[in-house]
Length: 336
Image 1 (cartoon, rainbow, N blue to C red):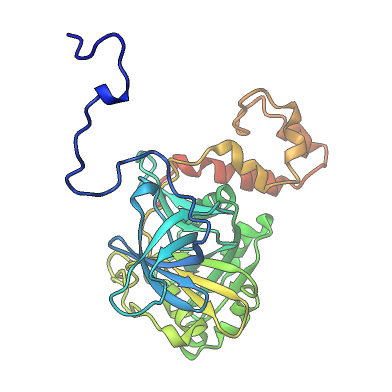
Image 2 (image 1 turned 180 degrees about the vertical axis):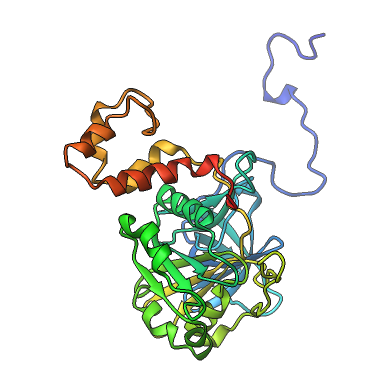
């Protein structure tokens, strides 16, 4: 039924009064050109601690961002109360474009992607040489995630007083990954901090590792002003430590221009979100050899052109073996 006549004007149309007295809803979003820049330091139950200039500011995500979440390391734009005083709350209105992204899933069958850290320059993969035993499959998975997300890997081996690093170094030698070897005594006395700090200067470094490997102890040595509780206990049956870091936290390196991001200990590192075709780009010496590969080549099949490329002497066979080991990581469980 037609409510108005054929010829209507604005006076003919009734409008309901706005009882609340607020502005009508609109799809036009403010640009917030005067918003302040900040960096997300940690996230805790919907509240984000951000560094704005030289002070920490508590903030929450604006509704206009929808489902897009900010994570540790994100560069964000904030409005509202930026004083950082107690009981004040700012609002994150924009998340800037990310230069890198470390992601993982709970397992290889889980489609839900978890963003761990944003805008980190490198990933320090911390593993103990004993107590608990090293898990090469977990290291491989962290490497794949680093290469896929645009982070440079750094291998940190702890507890060298309990076992030598030779076997692990042989396994990863062909990848040309920078590495550091430390002992338990060096970790406890802070002696390992100096050699690690040389690799962190001027960079944002995310630390990841299995529980009980000494990751948080190392972070405490690097940033003694902001000590985090360490585990000190590894289960004798499972070889696993208790989680003592429950949320990611970015800490500044006061003696150097850099940041350390401590993350909770991981027991699995799913790669359901990884596109294997991107892993080859971490091997620039092998990329030219893929030109003769069939379309959608997995680089681990009979028709792969990389075999002939390597046989002709263009690249080290150990590099091709390492590539294929990483590509097969998604098909293996970390404890295999």
